[in-house]
Image (cartoon, rainbow, N blue to C red; front, top):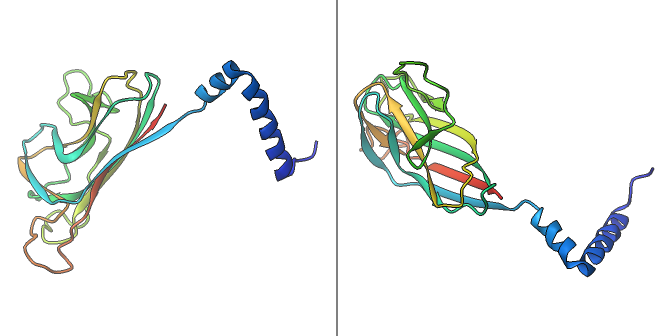
Length: 195
């Protein structure tokens, strides 16, 4: 069997649509079976600070999206990135992840009686841990969620640090000087719904 030319493919598609057009039920069934994609996103460009309490998950300021699923069968592809720095020189004991409402999603089990931090990934250090003047840190993570609801839901990004410290979102700890080594960045949460 030879490959069809572009014009032959178009002719067959038109023929199929014409056949379906005469059968309304078949057309509605065919259209309903076509997956639809919806995008939801937030870009956070504002700089902010927030307190972190040791070993306590905290939602990152501004990194949340509220939406109403189009279908109970919708799947959501979550993609997030955070940029900034923490005030402590021990930011290497830090994990990030996702929440749906008050539920933590996509994380491994902690183990029986464990107090370990769990999440989707760890902080990526931009420079040695004691550099709080330039070169912020970052995190990027993804997850596919199936909430199985048509009720409104809110997705959020969280951080857990092993230490009490201040989180500087989208900027370095020392943000005072207006020079190229005091970077300011954008954090984002993008959610693609496939209904």
